[in-house]
Length: 418
Ligand SMILES: Cc1cc2nc3c(=O)[nH]c(=O)nc-3n(C[C@H](O)[C@H](O)[C@H](O)COP(=O)(O)OP(=O)(O)OC[C@H]3O[C@@H](n4cnc5c(N)ncnc54)[C@H](O)[C@@H]3O)c2cc1C
Image (cartoon, rainbow, N blue to C red; front, side, top):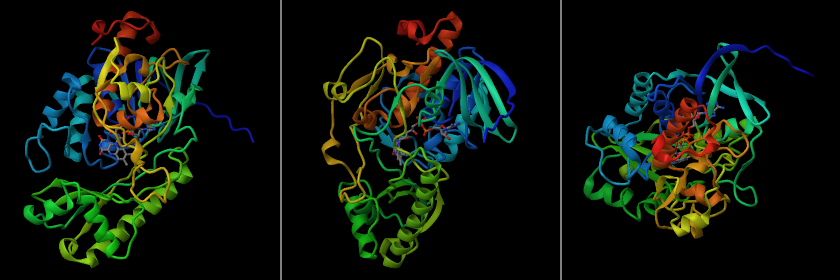
């Protein structure tokens, strides 16, 4: 069977950013603020990706991520309780406020947003990407641009262009997926609750003991509660690991179905177990299962475990990463929840601009989870701060390339665009 279809022309932009997670928002805003005609394409119905659609618990690695990050923190300003965001490297932000502020930032910058628009294919000519094809309520529509940015997290755009990529470890194994939930009804009592179930080293073990005590063995052996609001007793809740492929719709669907069942089963078990759990209620499960690892698109430089261990600095270093390497168990039968040999601290290291520039497609940049790196390095830079910062830099560099009519691999001096 051969299926052919006509695509409508949607518009020509200076820069098209694919994926409206934190990396994509930062890229689109930083590009549009520099006066370039920018389009942000997002498959879901809000901005923020895993931060919002995925009900992310903590923003991790938040220090020293540039003025733009500081501006976002100022805009978020307060957590769900109305308390000032703390000056620590890991904290919760308000999910709804994040959605709203990301939308406001895009509108103020002049970037166009299109929701419910899935980037499904790409038209290339030799090493140049000419257009992205999309599917949506509007039908089949294509968009042209001078520079494209892949911020899909999973490297969908690089893959659709035929760019080289890696996934998983040397055996192709990837970290598991997790579906996050929000819960309430847990009485927060600082002397009892705080010391046993959150904010201390034994917390995860204590939660696991109670889940086991209810007769359930959760698929994630380091179950997590994160306080979102003390005032309203709302918490982030993560208890599952799913081992399907995050790049296969059938696996993603089955993993989502299974994870949602497990969340409710564990919550019901804990409720019956009693104690602080007796009024536990699941208020929301994410509409987007969290895919920790997608494709890592091959760049002009590949950040490696050696760079991480050595705390490598680069002349074109654009983001300092301080988060440890963090690999969730690659096998369902691992009882700790993590691959412990990788759970290591390291000196701060940098991501160079070259890791954001595709080695194969001359007008393609990457930002967020899908930049160029190896399996272990990715486990450290895949968190909030670096996602946002790499997005900001990709957007600024795309604007510079358009302005000066050059391709990203000309490798401009950082001071000329940052
Ligand atoms: C289970 C889990 C727990 C995590 N916990 C934390 C944590 O506690 N703290 C932390 O800092 N980080 C955490 N992370 C890491 C988190 O992924 C990053 O912080 C950050 O969200 C990565 O940003 P991103 O923009 O690269 O990708 P994403 O947030 O994944 O955003 C990608 C966006 O692209 C869109 N998209 C994808 N494909 C297409 C397409 N083909 N067409 C159009 N749009 C598309 C998606 O809808 C999404 O909005 C966690 C990740 C997972 C999976």
